[in-house]
Image 1 (cartoon, rainbow, N blue to C red):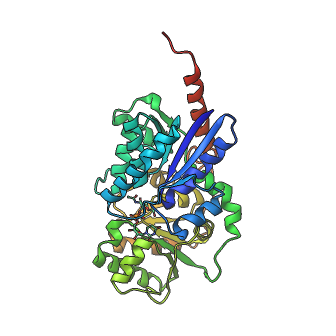
Image 2 (cartoon, rainbow, N blue to C red):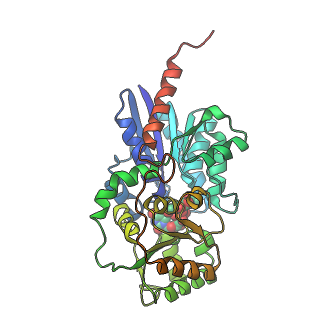
Image 3 (cartoon, helix red, strand yellow):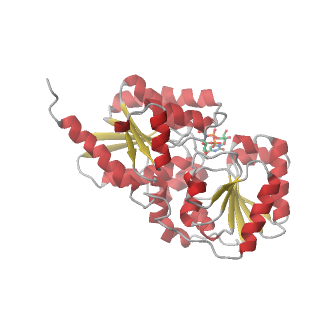
Amino acid sequence: MQHILHVVGARPNFMKAAPVLRALASTTGVRQTLVHTGQHYDSAMSGIFFQQLGMPEPDRNLGVGSGSHAQQTAAIMTAFEPVLLESKPDLVLVYGDVNSTVAAALVCSKLGVRVGHVEAGLRSRDRSMPEEINRLLTDQISNLLFTPSADGDQNLLHEGITREKIHLVGNVMIDTLLRLLPRAIECFPSGVASPYALVTLHRPANVDDLPWLRNLLDTLADFSAQLNIVFPVHPRTRQRLNEIGVAGNGGSRVHLLEPLPYLEFLALQTRASVVITDSGGIQEETTFLGVPCLTVRENTERPITLTHGTNQLVGRDMRRLRETAAEILGRNSTTAGPDPDRVPLWDGHAAERIAAVVLQERSEAAKPQPL
Ligand code: UD1
């Protein structure tokens, strides 16, 4: 029996792990353990996602919670090490680029346990982002690298990673999106009137710089003269908004909501006139859905969303944000709609490809070794 241990910790991990857990559950001879680090712990950031995604309850919750990067990373490592020693998996799968990802991968590599990184190879080339450091380090110490797009393979090869470790499998988050889109459409939140722009902001570079956050909100308030602004607020952003004295409403038609569950948020993306975000995953989801996306960052680790998709970088240029958004609204055309052929391998079968590689590992290991 092959034993696979999955580590998840933060909201964007859950929709990536869910299809891999399902794909491996439908194979024989695999035992799975799910460890939640507790990096995200609010029900709105974690529990509701497990329910909606149909994920099993975690076998272990390390309960690490929030803290500085060093505190959080160290707490995950310290709590995960005994769990790993006790459960002795054949392979650990880690997801994405959050602190839980690199912390778990480091523990594995020091104990000689094989690690697979799902969503490997993405690079923004901006080392001021904590996620970029997490990606670089995780990829260097992983044994199996599952990339969502061919640019990821190129990045890894340039960093000296051998071809044999790299597996271009496609985008697991799109597996989840495709599976749940029909249900999501039935979960459209009541009280949201079209046309609207959907906004999410949570990157430290945008929300921890308070004068800049004020500037962003003022731009959104101006923009709300043209359409409603629907803004589900991440807990980090909520704290910062409190600090600058913005509560309930960020301007007459800027509607600040609590963080939304997966299905409700996906439903909102499908009907948005435009999405304004600094998230990584939302750049990909809007590309798949054919909904215009403006990313409030200078760079992206997901360049395929620029070349094949609907994403545009507006950086810190608020004039560009206003003008591009106005241009999108002026087009007066409906959005392109979901398309499994828009990006190669973003077709709903990425997790099955990962499962096939994982099972292949088992048969390689079972072969008699040369003397
Ligand atoms: C983390 C990831 C980021 C990802 C994001 C998605 C890292 C370095 N960052 O950022 O890549 O895009 O998750 O959400 O791993 N908080 C709560 N409840 C929670 C979780 C957090 O209130 O359930 C608050 C805490 O005050 C905490 C703050 O949000 O200090 C930030 O949480 P943290 O896990 O440090 O990073 P995120 O900003 O969520």
